[in-house]
Image 1 (cartoon, rainbow, N blue to C red):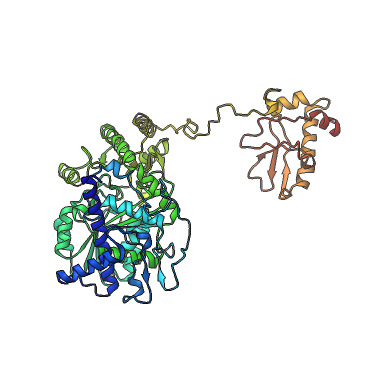
Image 2: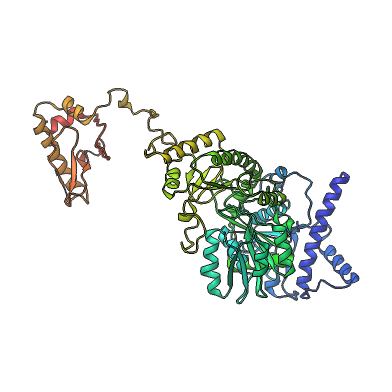
Length: 602
C-alpha cells in the first residue's frame, strides 16, 4: 500500500475507532468523556480487542444479557465512520461518484443493492446483530447516510421520508417552554409546521431577520435553544452570514440549524462554517429527477447524532430502502447537474435583469443581490445555485408568463433536471396566511434545469412576449410530447385501402337508396333502439333529430350537453365503431359495410 493510501486508511480507521469508543462509553452507562488518559487507553484497547483496528461492521454484536445501559441507548444502526474531521483528497465531482456503499457485502457489488426487507435474522435470542428491523436500520439506508455524511463532513447523517419529516425531527429536539428563532423569509411548509404544530406544543416561535446579526442578538433569550435559517432564503434569496450566526449562537449555547436545500454539498458545506445541523429536502438536488421524496439531517456532534437517531427510530420517519437507492443513484450525477444548471442560471439571470417588464431579480449573483450579500455568499459557497426569483409589477402578468411558458413547467419544488416555475404566494408558500406573508404577490420563482440554455432563453422570451400581449398562448406548440400532427405507426390495414372520409362523405358515398333525411332517421332509430337497450346508463338519454349530415347527437334529458355520438348495435361488437369527441365524429369506417346495409335494409 502506498504511503498516501496508508495514511488515508489510518485516518479512516481512527475515525471508526473513535466512533466505536463513543458507543462503548454509552454502553458502559457512564457517558463520562473526561476520564484520565489511562482509563481512555484501557477503553481503546478493549474496543480494539473486540472489533480490531479495521472494523467489520457486519460482525458487531450487542449482547443483551450483559449490557449495563438502557435498551434505548443502544445504537439503532451499525457503527459507522465519523466524517466530522475527515478531509477528502478527491475533488467534489469525484466525491459524488467514488463511494462504496456496502464494503462488507460478501459479493462485492459495484452498485449498492436494495435490501428490500423489513426484518433481519438475529444471531441468537440473547443478542442483536447489526440490523434487526428496517425502521431502525437498513443497509441501503446506511449506505446513503454514510455518503451524505461524507459529502457534508458530518459526524452522522440521517435519511427521512420527506424534507418536512427531517425539519420536524429538528423541532423535536426542543421541549415545552423552549424557544426557536426562525428567519422571517422561510419555506412555507416550515412556517406551517412552526406556527401550527410547534407553537401548539408549548414551543415558542419567534421570527427574526437572520441577515441582521444585531436583530438576532437582541432576539435571543434564556429560552432560545435553536436558531433556524436558510441561506439563500426561499424564495426571496436573502443571504445570512452563517459563520457569524454560528459564533453568535454558540456564545449563548444555542444550536444553529440551516436548511441548505438550495445549496447542496457540492456548493456549500455549512457544518464546516460552524453550523450544528444541516437539513436538506433531498427531493430536490440529491434526487435531481423529481422521482422520489426524502429529507436529510446532518449533524457534527456525536451526542446530537445519537438523539436524532433515536427520534428517527422512535417516530418511524426513516426513508425506505428503494428511495435510498434512488438517492444514491442521484448523488452520482449531482455535481454534473448542479454545475450545468448554474451555468444556465447565470445567463438567464442576466437576460431577465435586462428585460423591461422585469422589475427586480433575486439570486446570489451579480445584479441579484447587494454587493455585501454577494461577498458573504461567495465566502461560504462556491456557486450561485440554480434558483431565480423576480417580480413583474403585476400579478396577472406573472400568471400569464407562467401559463405561456412551455419549457419551465408550472409546478412546486425545484432542483430537477427539468426547468420549473411557480408563484410562491399561491403555490409553495400558500400555507402562510396572507396577513403574515412578506412576499410580493407577483413574485415568480424559477428553478433552472440542464436543458440547452438557448432553448430556455427562447422559451422565456416567448412567454414574456405573450404575457405582454393579450393573445392567448397556443394550445398545441410541440412541447406536449403528443405529436398528434405526425402519422401513426403501425397504420391500421384499412388506412392504406381507403382515404379518410368525414361522416357526411361516408353517408353520401356508402348509403344508397333512401333519401338523406330518411337514411339519417333510420340511423338514429337503430342507434336509439340498440344502444339505449343494450348499454346501461343510457336510459335517460334521447336523440335529437339530426338536421345536417355531419353530426348525430345524444342529448341528455336536462339538455345541458349534446354529446356527438355514432354507434352500431352492441350485438355486432366485433365490428362496432364508436367515435365521439368534442367536435363530432371525424373518421368512420366499417369492413363489413355491404353486409350491414343489406341486413338493415338501407
